[in-house]
Image 1: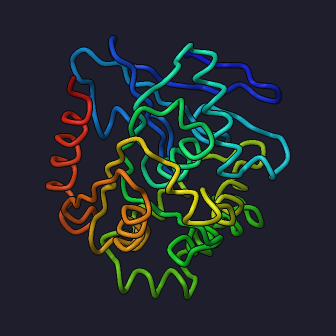
Image 2: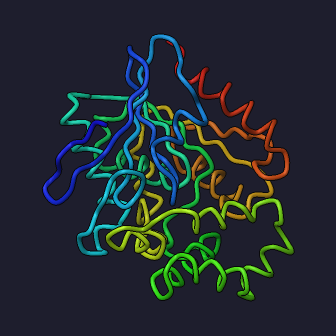
Length: 265
């Protein structure tokens, strides 16, 4: 498995295919494997997908302050440098969209274009749509994964969520099916408190082409977040896929098609 050694930890990354490189940045609690699972290979292209700190095979036992969106963007920049990738198209999903956006704001010369899928962050820390991730992280830190799963399922917050969004319940319960070595659960509590940008004026400096993709009826990725980003980015296009949780087969089929079109020459 390929790793890149950074100052305080080894960053693991996945790579599929050969040809024009594309960078994929995964969501909170997931890993770079999400890239292949969602998009697959495309002829003539290479897909590079790191595992963020505390995710996948990237173990991180440093201070919790390392779990910040701008720090993740710096890790991605270091990966690009080590792989000799000067300028790449970037696909970011949820947390990955936030990291991609921060990367593009700070180092626009390294990003050719972006596909931002189901954004979950704007410029306000601790957005309401990530409240359950915070709860899950706190319970795991206090009780360990197994006891935290029981406490989470018995919580009032999860009960209300389950009543409103039963189709999305497994996304939350999946957080309790993995291990959190070295305090990796801190990612769930720390990342929601950080932001990809501070002011909408920063978005006006992002001049590369950007496609922002949203869905309706998504409790973790509000449709309005995508609209606000698209309005703030000067060279953007807003698109919409079928609801991820209510029409999953259509969503995944159209997402794969979108990814194929984005990677065409």
